[in-house]
Amino acid sequence: MLLFPARALSRALFAALLLLSGLPTLGQHPAAHSADRPSTHGMLVFGDRHIYASHLPMFHSPHHYQVLLELTLSDSARTAYQASRQQFPMETVYTLEPETFVLPDMLRRPQPFRGTLYRGHFERGGTAIARQIPVQIKLVLYFQELVPNTTATPLLLLVGNADEQFVAHRIASQPDFDQIVSVRLAANAGTAMNLQPSALLLATAAAARPLHAKQLLTATPGAGQPPIRLTVVRSLYLEHADLR
Image (cartoon, rainbow, N blue to C red; front, side, top):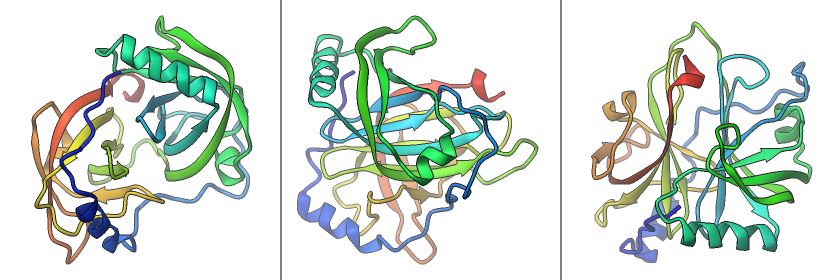
């Protein structure tokens, strides 16, 4: 997988982005205890220096959650991941097949777990590149239970760091789609958002449809905040069928 970090974005500018760190997200906190059964919760893996993961959601239990995480992988797993990205630069999909657990319980009290890292989708012919690796949840960036037959405003979820930024489609209602894209912030974005320790919700009409490379976006991070401009660099993952 070849990503395009926002090298042109100065670190001074990114420091200014921290000013809006108090803006709320609309994510929930995992419930004190979940009635879900343990299951394999596959995740899309993306990022370079920081490793991010997006739970592959559906609208039925026990997979009815949209979740964005920052992970810590073992050195050997990171080496295998980086080597595969260099060898297969056109591949955008990397997935993690973890051991079974109850997702909300794991997020409420993160514990180390093991999983197998794949180039490609682990349920659709992907190739295992690192087996039974130790994984640690470093940060829960976003958590939201998906409820069928409800509606919500389509939004974007922005995560990342000074070197690279990503946008996820905030799943709003059934049917919907799941998408992760890499983006580049405009050099004149001004004050915008803190990309950690949580995802930042961005309002834009473009959130209602899948994004595409070179698409220019103007989005609002919150009431009373100036809009920011982003350019979509590359779509890393787009899924419709699982969210019908």
